[in-house]
Image (cartoon, rainbow, N blue to C red; front, side):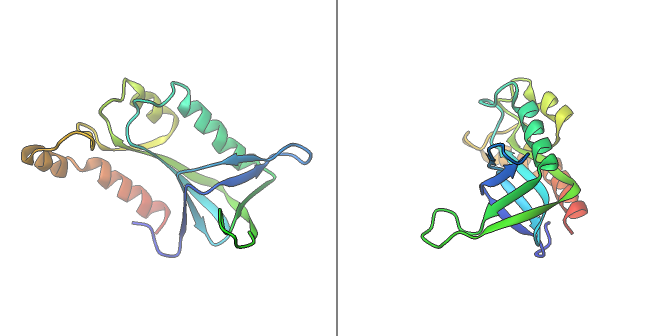
Length: 161
């Protein structure tokens, strides 16, 4: 789905400097998509929306705007190692992508529509939850109801071929 020419940083801290003299802010995207030294995408992954705060979509959008408008975004080549950390500056494409992938539509408490109105969002298993025991008939239904996976694949292929 994503071409090997892209690099993925998983749960990697990004340092965002908005203005000189102001303290930097750390942002921890679930997955950061890089093309060389260019930040081209962010993927946030949620198992379900049960514990997501009512304001998560809005706060997430604000973080995205901070990334877009920052004077400087960097990450460290090695995190939590004894190796001296090299700081790598990232350029941002004008309209880098942010998507939200929700594994389960169960336990959504009405938050999915709000999330979809604020973000490009893909729900992979709208009627099942990975924490629940799955029987053979349900497994067939999960496999047949793969529209969320297909749409996610199309999106990734379109943006990261």
